[in-house]
Length: 297
Image 1 (cartoon, helix red, strand yellow):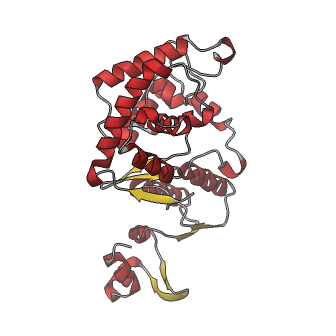
Image 2 (tube, rainbow, N blue to C red; image 1 turned 120 degrees about the vertical axis):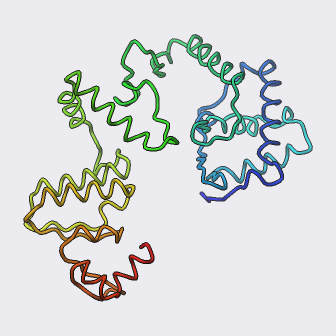
Image 3 (spheres, rainbow, N blue to C red; image 1 turned 30 degrees about the vertical axis):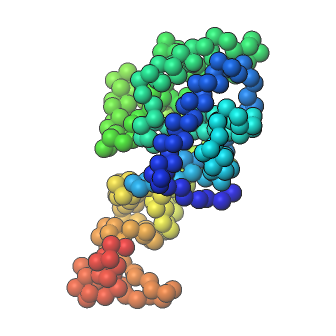
């Protein structure tokens, strides 16, 4: 599986692809709408990620670029069934709020909602229990507890949206007296071997909790908050140091700015001890630590 980088803004590749796909989809809808599509087409092994400059697609992209090149001079309706199914499956990976490609307008939104209703009403009896549809009047076991309360997803593009929504959720749970029940349910969740079913940040937090429960005489931590955002790193570090007040903590830092929180600092260079002392002392010396802090490391 090779990771490649595709510039969608080069030579209008993205807009050309979108225009031709929309025309083909509209044409195929009446002619072949009953054609059965395999599961592989509904869950394509393609990941899409966005940064400030480009969109990154993984795995199947070389095949998609080949299909795109074949459609430049031909009609999409003449594509082979396998090629057409791959193109039809690709948009299912699109998350409008995250990728912000501007491909979904109000008209298409209405058609998608209508397709949702059609899909739900025409499921065969043997598959009716295989899909859990959202219903505001009942709990959805296929969604997380947070998603059931919100009945939606947090828009991460807004500043501090996750923390602000999280605070409101906690307030609602407290107001309704549900926090103890939610905590008990959460503790019964099967996280898998070594927390394999959890996201990396949550898995790291579980490992930290396990280490704390052992109440060791000396707690040694090696880059344990590196997977968290800077605010989360500082918050976890402060809580652990407060909990371990008066006891030994040896912490290998990923973010050197956090060294201010410790009484004694050892700076390593190429596997050797370069200097040691308090942060104030080391800053005055202008040695290895000062260089690291100046470099933002």
